Image 1 (cartoon, rainbow, N blue to C red):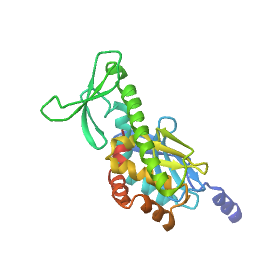
Image 2: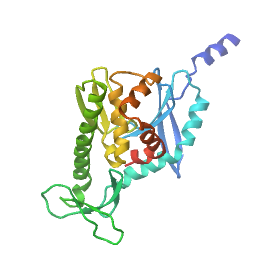
Image 3: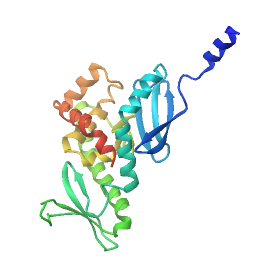
Length: 250
């Protein structure tokens, strides 16, 4: 009988497949994914998979659960903003290269997004988005992605020249948890939301991913490589640590 009990205990899963989380009286189901290569606990939200808690294979559920509870506020805020489309609406404010702008939906069906001078008493420059409110989010997001590509291509080319490497291709992505990545084939991927941050933040992520072409890790040698092309990289790194989660919510 004791052997049977021990066998059942051994077969009990180490982590649940999902967990119910109470967010402001709404019950949200968070999927739990055990990842063999994960080194840290991570909470993400995507349109395809919903909330996902990623845990290391050697982690403990008590630690994972504590991590999830600490980030309840972040998840609630992100779900709320996605539901309401906050940050992408007529009259709302949105940062562009670190400077707040007022979004203005124009009734004209054609045209491109334009940056205009301040129009109201708050003194903010405006982003004029054609096509009416119903098309505003898509058109503004497409324009922001194009701006991000232009800035990142420029900065990555500079860092690649400084480090003596070549970039195979550069892609702009709508990632929910990552600012950038570099593959072994020298393909660089970047989150379009970097265009919302101050330019030195985008520059840091560009330098970071280009440096990975030489060092596919985060060893001291890697950080020395980043410093070779961007000596003050700590400035952008610190900004992302302090403000990155809010930027991801847009």
